Image (cartoon, rainbow, N blue to C red):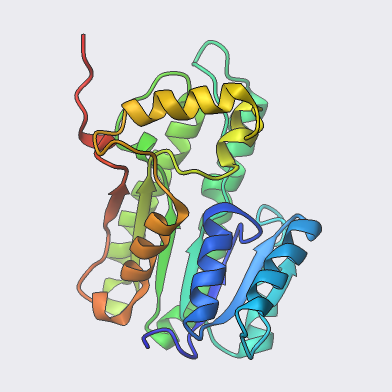
Length: 259
């Protein structure tokens, strides 16, 4: 199995895609360093991992990626002595047009979606060079096409995509690969936070129904869809894949608007 004994650091691991990654890689025998801000959600993830019968308990790092990058890397190395895969999953989203988005909103997204990823990656590089490891950044389909009412989020994710490409070029001759995943609408709590609608609300069901129509494949995405793609990008067997921004979007990134 390709991930047995690999040290994998996952940010935003207390929910959504990050939680799904934690459970998947734990079952595959990876040694995990998990980062999150919500202690209660973290406890729930730990419980689920323990239910999988995992021998090695993950390192749970209660931290904010925007201010704790040095501590996150140092605790990971102190625990395991190495790092093989960095999954930059923590993200901050929100709606707003160029007329309605606030600078506070933009700055918050930039800090989480770009600056924190830059700092964590930079700090992780010496260890990834040593292990000939790789980075997977979780971006979004909104970086690939223009969508209404999400200008700040789109701009930060577009920056993340180009950061991915630049890092891939910088690190290729050092044996470190850097790729990004660009999901469309994924059935997690991310959107409920971004737009303030709870999953049990009728309005959420309406959003899901409308979103389904914009995905040519006929459904919204799942965390399972994302984890399968992340696993592919993170495997040593994908050693010829770098600088990729991979849409996991049910065809949404290639859909032409109807006028």
